[in-house]
Image 1 (tube, rainbow, N blue to C red):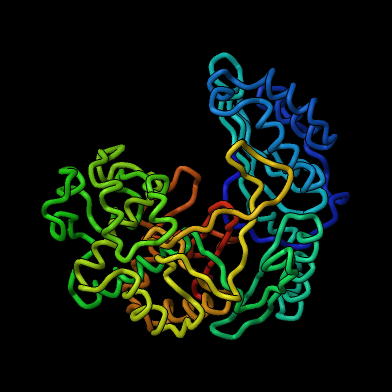
Image 2 (image 1 turned 90 degrees about the horizontal axis):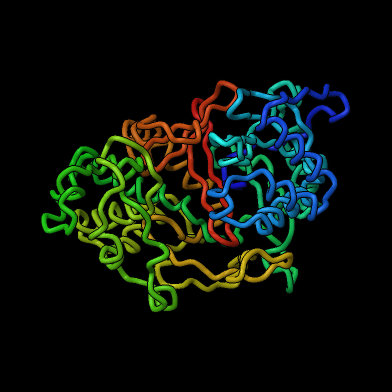
Amino acid sequence: MLRSVAFAILVLGLSLASLAQPTLPQTKPGQYLDGWLKACSSGDLSQMTKLISDSLSDRALKRDSAANRAKDDITECTQSGGYRLVEVQKSDEKSIEALIVGVKTNEYDHLMYAVDDQGKIDRGFLLPTDPPESTLPKDLSDAALTREIKANVEQAAKTGAFSGIVEVARGNRVIVTATGGFANTAKKTPLTGSSQFTLGSMGKMFTATAIGQLVDQKKMSFDDTVGKFFPDYANKTVRDKVTIGMLLSHRSGMGDFLGKRTPDMMKNGVKRASEFMPLYEKDEPKFAPGTSWAYSNAGLALAGAIVEKVSGEAYPDYLRKHIFAVAGMTNSDPNNVPFTAPNLVTPYTKFTDSGPSKDWSEAEHDIGSPAGGAISTADDLIKFADALRNGKLVSKATFNELAKVHTDTPFGDKYGYAMEIHDVYGRTLVGHGGGFPGVSTHLYMLLDS
């Protein structure tokens, strides 16, 4: 099962006992889901391992063993207290999609399983999702919002599902701050609005903002091709066919580069985004540019190199001068050279070189690039969001272009220019998340509010 990072609103809703238990269809996917829910509730590793071993296709088991999958699933199930089936959303002979909720965490997830032609489970995912609107509290005043969020964070922290900070703001005014866990577990360092986190891919929004500023200055456009700025770019297809807009919306066909970063880069950092170019410049696109969607860190890294080319400034310097300083983000850093400070949060992970572990250990620290990895705080990110949407960083027209739907994703969501776009109870939410071992970040803005 793939556990992916996605936006979720967590609320204290109706009690589980007040919701009727739906019936699962007697299809192969329905039977597997029934078995999985029972194994999950039991917490029995051998039961889960047998279910997975007997039910998954050979192709799926080659991607990851039954033993590893079962360990991951039982860990997830133990943390959630098992899952309750809320609703079967889609079902046919080949697949099933369902809404489930954690018994202890009260977190809602969208689950999908699909079988191959032999009736074996071949694909599946578990994604955080929004609770049914009927479960939302009726009182959404600031006081009620504060109670709900603090109760949720406290509950999630108790079950080990959350360690970090949640802040909600209206403009620059913080409505509620709630924390769980510690910035450093051994030292029991408290978390605050000025605790400094590695952001992961949330930092892609900084790159899109930089591009937007240069578009506002009429130094470039979203329709310009890579070749306008790098006429000698090694891959001809990327050079001639990929536009700035494709780079920012993951429609370039380009792939990843993070795993190709050298030990020296990770230890000593880089001074310019262009230093990453040799890691991806010769790669052939996965598809004809503009014809499909595939998440691409290399595409955003190239966009950052173009910022350097157009502005004449190194990407890290550009962030400091034109984004952080303008928005008043005094505790943020590009992290292109490994960042250290007393307020830096220690990242923890259960992933090791030999596979998942039951114990937490300190994760490898990331370095920043135009694809993500900068350092910031909850307080600074509120300043960034406010400055971005209110014309301080880019024009209103350019912000609207960043936040406009430019493509669909395979996960059913929409995507703009380095902006995830979600429909939440009929309202539009835009922003970006970030994930890296030890890192899970989310920044979202509710439009027209």
